[in-house]
Length: 293
Image (cartoon, rainbow, N blue to C red; front, side, top):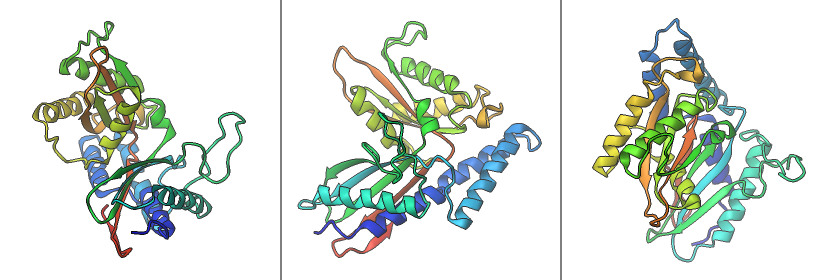
């Protein structure tokens, strides 16, 4: 199965994610607006957000000026060249930037100069997994920098927060992360959380949780219960849309778990802003494309 020739499909994947907010996220924003007083700052902020979402979709323009880092998970069959997939996606980022679906946001960390192409060292972030299916599946997030700044990683036990090495401790630190973010993460946010792992694997797994639909249910009952409790309690913190106060601080909480070493108990929180941009595509053996979201 050839991996080349996918550049245009990947450009379209980027365009869809950058300009079309998924229906589940739009529905969650609309439900949040319905909870707020229409004349209050929170209601007005959500109204402006929803107007922006509609305008971006109608004009095929980026939803946000920070078009984010493409964070991509490939599943591919045996024999597909991951080097070819990576080259195609990197070229797609460059073309998407030329077409203004992405902004040229990649900056050389050492010189401070913009690369001008939207791509750079570590941008995009690509993760490859082999599977037994005869098709390639690509799932992507566009992860904005402002919300990335308010992500957090806690090491339990955390004495100041009275957080032990249990799910109650997890609850305490996740709520702390939400409170500390205030409006700086462009609330209302979606949280991707990883319990366990090491400092590297935990951040990757926490980001992967953001691919889950807003309304899904965690298959692990105790984590499903914790997700619901954190969503409810997070929305009682009063941070509200863009930090203006109100009842809608979070749209969803999604939790994954990894095993850990005895000495370590990390809780890793990836904060995604209201612009929870994601898109997915499947490419079969003959090159036929099916859009998954």
